[in-house]
Amino acid sequence: MKQTDFSKLLPSFLEGYLQIEINASENTILSYCDTIRLLLTFCRDEKGMRVEKIRISDFSADLMSV
Image 1 (tube, one colour):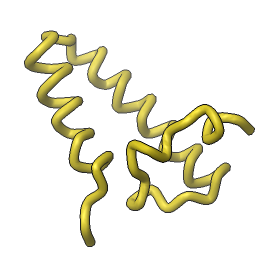
Image 2 (cartoon, helix red, strand yellow; image 1 turned 60 degrees about the horizontal axis):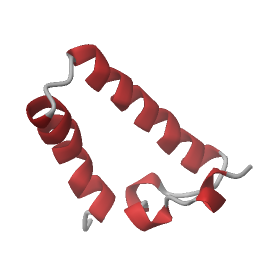
Image 3 (cartoon, helix red, strand yellow; image 1 turned 90 degrees about the vertical axis):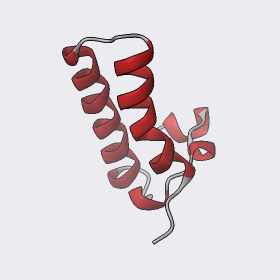
């Protein structure tokens, strides 16, 4: 399966930007991971989206309105 831009960029954000660029603590990185996991669960359960197909452009104010 072809990766989306979101799935390609997420690891570099978590491991590269947070960890290396801004030297975020392990707890901060874990907090980001938990928050992203909750967001993806919301997208799947409440919006009926296939998590593996989510793109960055899918994130909008409309997505977050319930």
